Length: 509
Image 1 (cartoon, rainbow, N blue to C red):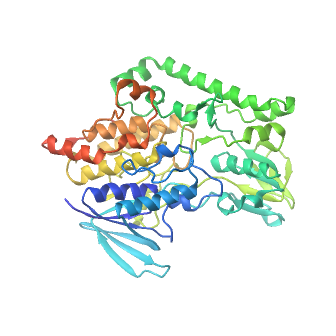
Image 2 (image 1 turned 90 degrees about the vertical axis):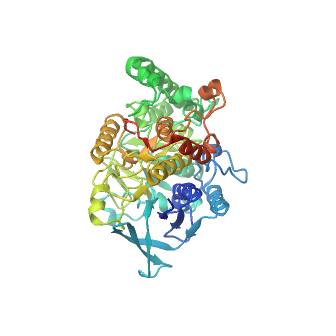
């Protein structure tokens, strides 16, 4: 069944979905509001790099056509996405902003503004994929009394276009996500004294555990990822481990946490008692596993050493106002500064182009949109969401999500009732709120649970979820995007052999 499908957004998720759906015979058009494809990668600060390895971040059937850095830069990722669009001959329409989706009996009417003009195009599609991403909303801001008196600059990470302009300043950085620790480290390396203010420190993953083993060995091979608590464990063995041998799981993560604490404090060597005191302010009191979320960050090179040396001074506090020459904290202190850098992350996803009755369903929760299989909303027909199953193996997850949705559209996979889907969503929402620290995208991400998630979806498609060549490699070798190459051909073969539609598993994910 060939459909005409509109994809809203040209980030990595939208491009991955379009590549799968087009190869499955659908007519696909990608609408991009800006003049450049690439989504959030077009709006990053200088110096940002992918936290994963380059082998984790590509469309499974289209490896990088050039060799990027081990952790690719934003420029390299944009170059790759442009190459992927050419390779798959995707129809990407830049400067096409979707103003409104109007529901029809058999699809959607898409109202567009082209090249910055007011509404001047209307097209109709059988199905729509929303791929606007969970990090494209404006940066979160806070109302600071007295800010009109402040003689310096108040900026966010999206205002940083030249790292040298952060040099030789008295800088206050607020927040503890990736952008905050990155920019604090960049500024300290350029001669600024940085006051780093945060309410609660987070666990930062070292690039190399114990200084030797790349952190991806703790997440991307099954022998370790099977230890990650999840809202759904796909196999009987995993369920037995987490239900009957939970003390083993707790001990495993306690050992990893202990290693990270020792590694963090080792940065104090040569910095004396003052350095150790500053570093202790960065030790979280909550569990490591509760920080395994979208906001999980790798510690930037030099951050801990800069804290130990006093180039970055950490403060566990809240900014409550501004004076003429600085920042006021809730403990009564004032931090003199000439630049306040707010790195508070993006707010929960918003969908201004959706009908109001559907916006109410999608935007009602503080931790993000609630979706079945992290792909569709049970009460919104003929529409799916790309990139809201965001995880550490992000692009393959987008591809598998697209293939799963394609199976639903073709009638190869039967969905349960609306009530059953809503019950699954409620289960996951409750589990995440109990076990994962808050973030505005908590409900629309799978984070480090990508193995559990992908295993379930592949099983529902009738495909082998174990992608390595032998059992030993399956346990010990890190998973990469290329492990999911060939899925479309495998799906076609499974579909031909099935003899009828498959049913989804009675499990929430």
